[in-house]
Length: 78
Image (cartoon, rainbow, N blue to C red; front, side, top):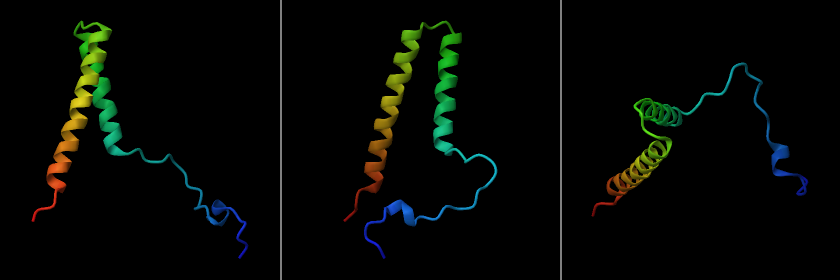
């Protein structure tokens, strides 16, 4: 075997399929929720700066909540 071959040269491509690749469900749910909240707040008469600030703060709080929840449940118990 030649050591100078590229790593991707030995990869075999799968059969060409029809259709589109599936989107990951959590990403789709997050996008739909954020767009729905943005449209709802804008339709309710909030200005754009308030909508962006609300969505940003909510997203940051959600990330921190998920991180701490994962840390609690993944801690080893002695």
